[in-house]
Image (tube, rainbow, N blue to C red; front, side, top):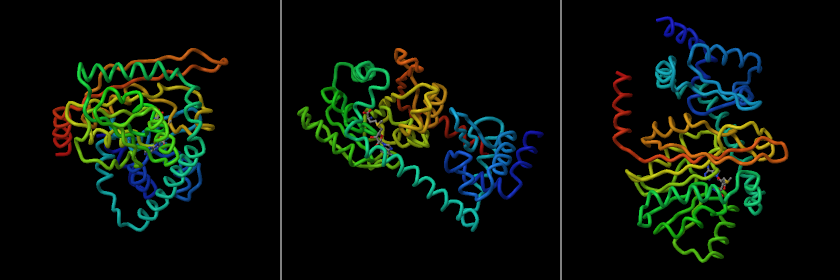
Length: 334
Ligand SMILES: C[S@@+](CC[C@H](N)C(=O)[O-])C[C@H]1O[C@@H](n2cnc3c(N)ncnc32)[C@H](O)[C@@H]1O
């Protein structure tokens, strides 16, 4: 009762309802919220603090940035989900906020794409900052071979394929591969690389990983190598990737474990400083993937800087799990 009352009190104010609407659509920093609402930063911070205390909003700190999103777990999650449903999207204030949110998100996307475009040709060198590529590629390849058994796998999709490195090394182990990426510059490099390597069972396509241009259940394997840390909505990306995976198919995700290397954000446009195993497993379960035990690849310390650990997360598409979860959610809603 106390929890419900404090949640209702926290929500019963116009700015805070606007925050429910915004944070249901995207993870945002205080600066971004301030930009959208046109209110002072201390004021916005006060509202957010109150909503976090009431369990309606989750805050997570990454280095010097703090992100806010509508709670999807914990004591306030059910009320947050209910409020999200009730927000009137045709309300003038809300639709203006959404228009400003769209431009904030578009600005983010442009910055990231500018960065990728500027660095397309040298990307392979930038990757050397991290744990050795060979180590990660070997572990990923072992996972792929393990999944395929003695056979080649059928269809593989590499999301955020960049220079096409993953499809290039996986090519002998699948029948047909597609590498998809948003950056035309990256794809130009990928095409050149694949042609040089004489690979003819891979297609390169331009597209957005949040809206993949493929039907449901189209691939046996989906790989996502060093892409998630650039995104502002990892769960949505996983949901879209799981949609195109066939039942029983595997998703292979390689990305950083949590770290403190802030320069990767300021100089290399990383949005997230790594992911915890719990965060990825929970996001997998939400989209009907059964997580397998993660594998860790640690880099040696370099120039006194902290070392970076790459994790390989694997999830098998398991429709029973999704059905269980959906019926559970429906029961909750009733
Ligand atoms: C660090 S690169 C990794 C490339 C490749 N997977 C590899 O490991 O070599 C990240 C890639 O994600 C792509 N990317 C970022 N946002 C994307 C989006 N919304 N849709 C598709 N690709 C995206 C970028 O263009 C970039 O090529």
